Image 1 (cartoon, rainbow, N blue to C red):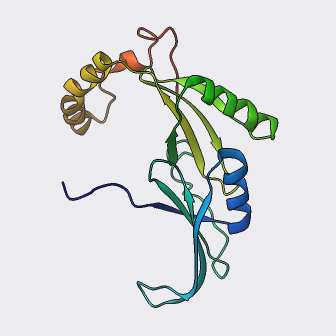
Image 2: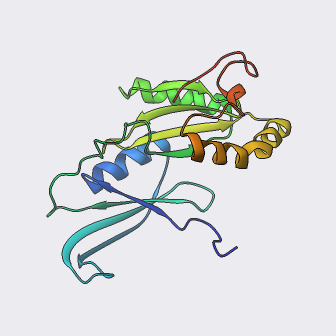
Length: 183
């Protein structure tokens, strides 16, 4: 395989300092690099920016650009706000619930935990309007094997019908985990 790992994922932010402070305070992600230029290196366009990089653990990096000369950032209004999100893994259900309580105590609205059977997760928004997900894996090897066995059939059926295939309905219908969940 050509790809070794994701080097970084970059989003836009309204304010670089506010973003760094929020991620450090609420998720413990430390600032590891800041780059600022008056010209875009790849295009040579005159466009000042601040590019910040945060440690997301395990060699993963979450980055943001602040673009002060551009119109205010907005979201894709043709896509529901639950679709585009950045999901990060935590180590245990206790960590997930503790983080949820800490976020809510700080006045941040949190959805979940949502039971996806193979993982449980919470959802919330950062100060830039980006939806974040924290997830803890709960699936068994057997569950993952069941999903692996039907993945190609599901894609083929979806491609033909544009209707949700029922091959993995057990993930959210409550039959495997005592409760269903939505996005």
